Amino acid sequence: MAFQKVETSIAQGLRTTELQADYDACCKRLLSEKVILANLLKGIAEEYKECSVENIENRYIEGKPAVSKVPTNSDKTPPLITGIDTVHKYEDHEGVLYDILLKSHVPDSKNQIDLIINVEGQKNPESHRRLMARTVYYVSENIVVQKGRVFTGIHYENIQKVYSIWICKNQAKYRANTINHIQPACYPQYGNCPEKKSDYDLFDIVLIYLGDEEPPEDAPEIIRLLYVLLSNKMSAAKKGEILEKKFNIRMTQSMEKEMNTMCNLGEALAQEIAQENARSVYLNVLNSICTKSNYSVEQAMELAGIPENERPEYLELLHKQSESEEKK
Image (cartoon, rainbow, N blue to C red; front, side, top):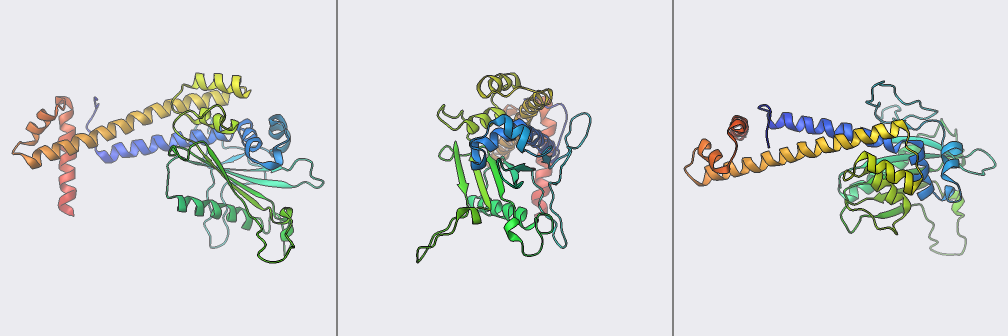
């Protein structure tokens, strides 16, 4: 481990956060490719079970999906948005910033019926109760915002169905390689007059859980596809080869560029996190040595095996740590 300059842990954290933001933005742009979204809809939406991926991509997905972050590629051009935006704002309400939002037509519908599709990437495990509540909130927002845009007055029958698809990475083994659907259901308590599903089928929350290890061969195709696309364990070239051979997804220049960028960012992020963790370990060791013995900081660094060129940095970090504790 060799540091080029003295740097505070705050600066290190800021750089790691910046890398993470760029990495996440790159993942969003890859997920927003129409061919990937078409495979996603084919794999989870009942409306598209009988459709080819090609038809979903070219006939049913409307326009170009809206992405929450302006792309960071060289031309800095934001995506073209057709009739939909990633931020819902209305009076006295700041709204929600969605990762990806798009409209897609329902196949073979007599009148043009649209679906609203929201795709969210969830990189870190969070309280499952919070995640569940968040998914319901996002669906509710996408339904409420339709008044005055999709329907007016009391014509609630015109509400468009909402899909909220959550791709959750870094999941524990017991949850990995799972797809769960949360949908409205009718449970008659008394009598025998069930409601028609088509009358209340207004949302579908889909939770796709990905683990760190490669999914088994019998896992649903969409899980195996997403694992390859978002994996940080294989090169961009290897990803492209698998996507073309196993999933018949032809690499475009933009996809190849995004995958190269994502892999490079992933490596840089891993290195930054490793360095940050190493700092934390060394600081704990130094504090422990100095607290439990009469060694000076310089002697503690010698004992811990910290190279001489890195010692000024640790002196500064220990000094800042001491100042912070004194303020408390």
